Amino acid sequence: MESKEKLRRLEHLLDRANNANFSYQDTNFLNWKNEVERNLEKIYGRESTEFFHFSKLRFCYTVARMSGGDDSSSHRQCFDKDYSLLKKSLIEYIDEIKNYEVSRENIFNKNVDTMNKKIFISHATKDKTLVEEIIELIESIGVESEKIFCSSFEGYGIPLGENFLDQIKQELSSEVLVLFVLTQNFYESKICLCEMGAAWALSKNHVPIVVPPLNYIDIQAVIPLTQGLLINDSSKLNSFKDKLENDFRIESKLTLSAWERKRDRFIRDINTHLSDV
Image (cartoon, rainbow, N blue to C red; front, top):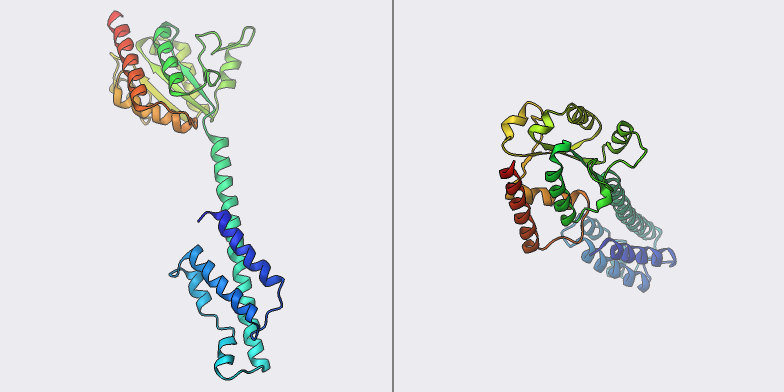
């Protein structure tokens, strides 16, 4: 049962109690009590703590009936005590559900606020052809082009007239997923190494994309604790797709067959490029 329905039932029971003047000799109270019992069983189950606490309440009403009826003040006091306890319990159950929903909403909003809002592709200019393939793959997974920052391509990089270093610093933040396209060209570029240092300091989420003939051993000295992927490894690309779908809350996901076709085409193009180098 969803929280909204639980709240509706419990608030209805509490409203009935607040708008009635029940007594232990009142048949309306018995009807209400039975309704409380049915709803607590449906909401929490007969084995729950909530139902157990309810079952221990006696209200003295049934005792009075079995003994031939007794309207003494002691019976009234017992009834008032248990009746008050039950109403208090209903209020607590309602508050618990409301607090749970608020907490869950806060967690969701926090996740939305802290999720990756952009992809920053750190790469060497000489590897522009490789990077273009990566961009197309990312977009095919469902990441919008305006969420991709790549300095080598018009529309993905630094607007005309903007300061290069200032723009790089502005794009890097804890909300950015940084992709390092690691090639020999990357390691030979002082700008790339500086960019890597800035990205490492300013962002929390990094994925090294290792391009053959480099391998994992080659990057361990630079990025020893980050899980990366070989650019032409199909299983790692599957994991990369899953990560992007989760990080960017992509709802319209590719079918398996469509993804495998795009992934395999990407690998073929990458391998062709590497063989031509």
